[in-house]
Amino acid sequence: GLPLLNPVSMIVCIADLLSADEVAHIKDGLTQAKFVPGETTAGWHAKLVKQNEQAAKQEAVEPLKALVRQAIARNALFQAVACPRIVHSLLFSRYGAGMSYGRHTDNALMGGANFYRSDVSFTVFLSEPEAYEGGELVIEGADSERPYKLAAGSAIVYPSTTLHRVEPVVQGDRTVCVGWVQSLVRDAAQREILFDLETVKRTMFAQTGKTPEFDLLTKTTANLLRRWAE
Image 1 (cartoon, rainbow, N blue to C red):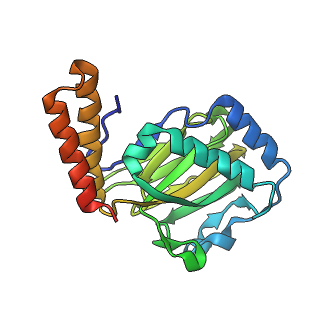
Image 2 (spheres, rainbow, N blue to C red):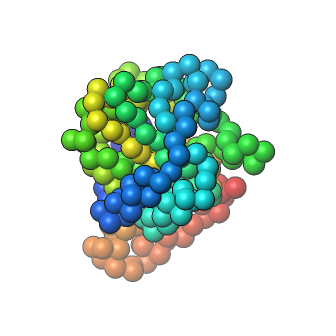
C-alpha cells in the first residue's frame, strides 16, 4: 500500500526512487558534464540567493534526465502524489563548500515559451548524506519548518507553493536532480483527496480483494479524477 501523508503539507519522501546502479550511472555521467552558475535559471529575485552550479544543456546530460523520468514513471507513490501531466525543467545541481540557495519560492511558470505550470516540486538526492556537511533542504510550513537530507536515490516531493531553501554546505559535495510537475489536477486539496482514496483502495484490495465496496470506491475515485483533471 501507499504510506499516509501529512494531510496539511502533502510532502512525501520516496525511498529508492533510483537504484544504486542508476545513481552511480548518473554521477559517472555528470563527470563529463559542464557546470555553470545556477543563477542562470533563477527568477529575478531568486538570483540574489542562488549560489550553486548546474549542468548546462548538452547532449551528455539528456540520457541522464531520461533515466530520472523513467524512474518517476514507474513509481506508484510519485504518480499518486503528483498526478503528473508533464514532468519538466529537470536540472542537475551541485553545491560545493560555501554554496547554498536562500529562501525562495519556485517560479509559477517554467519552460520558456511552453509555459509549464509548477504545481509540484521534487528533489532526487544523488549524494549520500555523509558525503557533505550542511546542505539540508528546509521546507517551511505555516508555523514551522523541517529539514530534509535523504539517502542517495531517494526523493522528496512537495508543493511548489512553499517557501524553501538549501542550507549552506560546510564541506563536501551535494549533488541533486531537481524538477517540477504540471499536474493533471491543479488543486492541491483535490490531489490530496485522490491520494487518500487511492491509499484506501490499495489497502482494501490487499485485505479483502475485489469486493463490491472496492468497485464502488474505484468508481468514485475515477469519477472525481474525470471531474477534476485538466
